[in-house]
Image 1 (cartoon, helix red, strand yellow):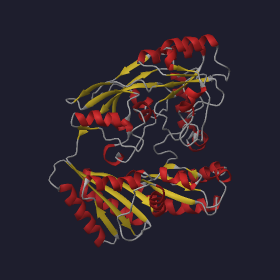
Image 2 (tube, one colour):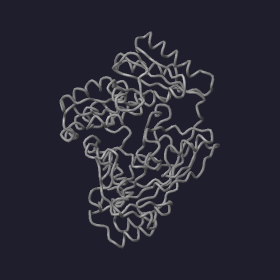
Image 3 (tube, rainbow, N blue to C red):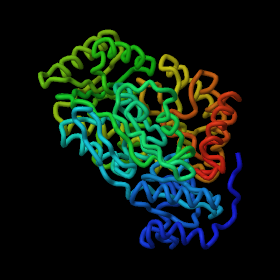
Image 4 (cartoon, rainbow, N blue to C red):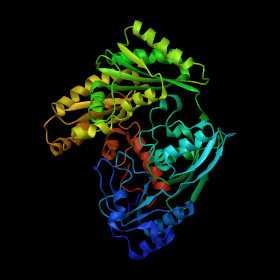
Length: 477
């Protein structure tokens, strides 16, 4: 596969690209470009010859046709909430950023087909609101839902807290509209539940991080809204109790179990310390906490009754030491805020080395014990901040710097810490990226932990769809 060279973009090409979107939406001023060149952790800061903000799929296609002919690298970007640098251009300044943020139309909401067609720049919160207005649910839920956009959500195959019941982004997309590297448009916006006509092209682009094509619109799957929800925060005597509790919850609640999140005591302590107006509504401290949500199709109290019976049985089995069930929507939101603020609460503590991994659910307790040993060997005194989606094996194993250690000195250990952690994950049959993707951060690790056959297939797909290597160069592969 040929890669684009890191040479300045010719002036005439920049003019052609600018003319496609108009001067107002072709950003060359450094101050105007700045929000598109930096990710929120400040780990990756790039440069761009131009930031383009097309307003239609046809403009995206013309941009790609022009870039393909000129051999110019294009970095697709949606809400810029990615956590592995996949949406940030390189430091060469030889690439353009293509933001889909102006593709804002919700083209259709089809209740009969239980589907919505939304363009790539529509935020997740806007999708939720549009579905809710029609009495339906789009169940993907992320802390960044107010700023993350559908194009990026699908390009990274985002997960979230409701994966247990509804699946990740891949499971929630029925069809796509995609602009290819050479500017051709694939219209795959079908809302069919079944289409067994060969290769599933949709799944090639979901999770490809903009390296195979640019998603410009998607047909999203909608669901009936639960009539009621019951939420509980639960204290556990040990992490092994989470396994027993999860098994019991599945048996008692079945498909009504819509969330099963877990958090370490230190993760909760950071939230209480740094996030205003948060409190722990339990009397005694515990080493681990679980947040459970049970939903019901009817507003008849069944969800709350199921949760109460579950907690009574779990307490008798010694799996639970304390619990509180939310008695109002406000209380439920307060409980969820403890979990959803875990990432934000780490920033004031200094440097944090992040790991978004997954392991088989039965091995989570064993993994956590071994991971603590790995951390101590790499950086004595470093403090694991552990939380995640227990029900699907997704562990956010973030490691905060030791107290009083210099931040830069600690962050210099990132590669060593990640290599050790990813080695452990791989030995335990897990994945080095559960929901954030590969981007720039994990590209080297992918080479280490994917088999040669897998990498060969991935490179063959990249070469077939992007022979000049202009789509998001240097990412993923």
